[in-house]
Image (cartoon, rainbow, N blue to C red; front, side, top):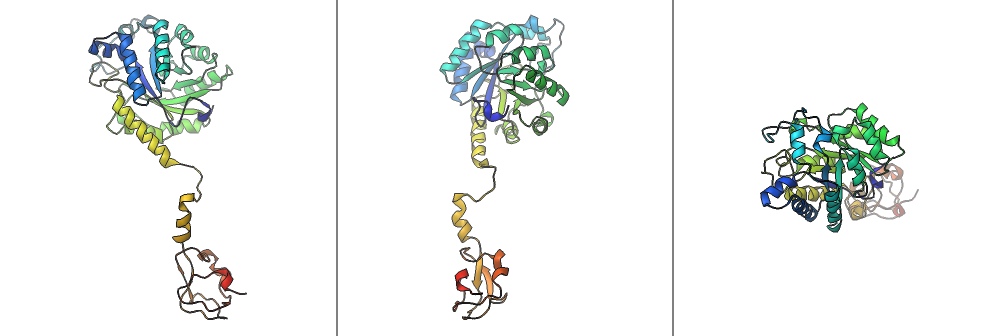
Length: 355
């Protein structure tokens, strides 16, 4: 499905990946996790972000007890996936329903990435779009399970090649669901700038020209948000970035997250880019009409041309304004006779000339 057919997407659709960061915010502010999640929704909405996204999983259903970490343990010291995920898996259907309704009141879209069928089921009525985690791109049965619910699908493509991405997209299509987008992603936490490979967005465009393009970012943001902006300029229109209220907090998803200041910076730059980008069709714009007439050149008499005298390359020149005979038509009038005296430095018009 083409980008414009996703009714909820505008020129840019920024997803604040809250994930489970609200647990650390709750601890910092000495409030409940649910209150912290709502606070983060408040801040995201105030920043102009279009969507907040959480993660719906249960640690014991997601990973084995022996699954090792794949993140920077100098930032997140827990080395066991099971231990980390169980630390942050206390929300369920009731909490996400409350957060979905709260988001709606705040005028911001709600999403949560499901990691099992139970989560996919209870999230169905709470959000408009299903997000497929990069980790599930080869989980074809689960992709089909979600796709059968006939909602748009966004597939993150971290650590995947084109063959794997196509298999996932085809899995969605096989259910009769044509609403799918693919998001460039590097499954490395954090992603060094030299590993971001944003040109892969163009590769995705070449292989999937009719799909919505996006980017899920794990780089450490710079002050100008050039990471997200560069992806946007390259064609990503759905942008997902981890979101926090305090990038100095310990934990895996704070130090490489954006905050409200970062989000505003990116959205302002994206908005200005769309204004600058304008129309794809190259043509003369209304604001250029005067310039077109007065900044171009016309045939001009180079000295007095007497009545009956023929125009030659020696008695004409080319000067502004462009309100007379354009230079590219000079060959049409060379050799024609003046119907009247044409004073020096006069813009020549067709009605001044005979055969």
